[in-house]
Length: 187
Image 1 (spheres, helix red, strand yellow):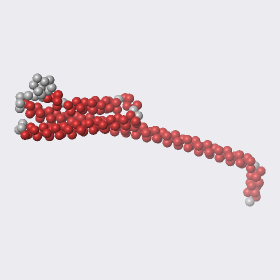
Image 2 (cartoon, rainbow, N blue to C red; image 1 turned 180 degrees about the vertical axis):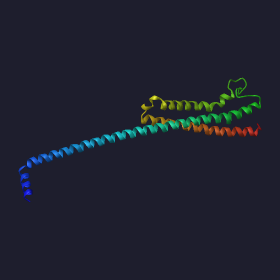
Image 3 (tube, rainbow, N blue to C red; image 1 turned 60 degrees about the vertical axis):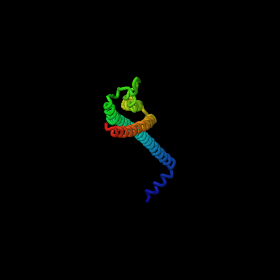
Image 4 (cartoon, rainbow, N blue to C red; image 1 turned 180 degrees about the horizontal axis):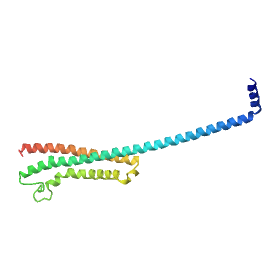
């Protein structure tokens, strides 16, 4: 018990020094906590930046997949159009001794193929735009695209999807009508 008393008396006589030591320890712990918090903030910022970069690449991939999908739809449309409309119409014209390059009206310069190629002409701008988007997304400079650019490209692709699907719908209707006409005339 005597040791505790001596310790207590010694602490009372050296209380200023003990307070100084404790305050230095508290400041050291506080600085260490602040440095740790700063480190955690930097880690969180890096993770957020990595997450944003990953989200940008995911968006870029989705836009590219969408562009390829619409490019494929255009190619399917072209093949289908050629098969369902042009071949059937040419078959019907052959019954009358004409072909797709025959003038619609004698003495005129307009041919059947010019009139029937209208859907192709309507899709040329869509096809050109989609091809340029694919080139832009697969080029070496594609990393320079930001999220806003990618969202604008995606919006433009969605507009083109409307044009493509509308053309596909119309060609289906025209193919059915042409088939009916050819059936009625036994061609």
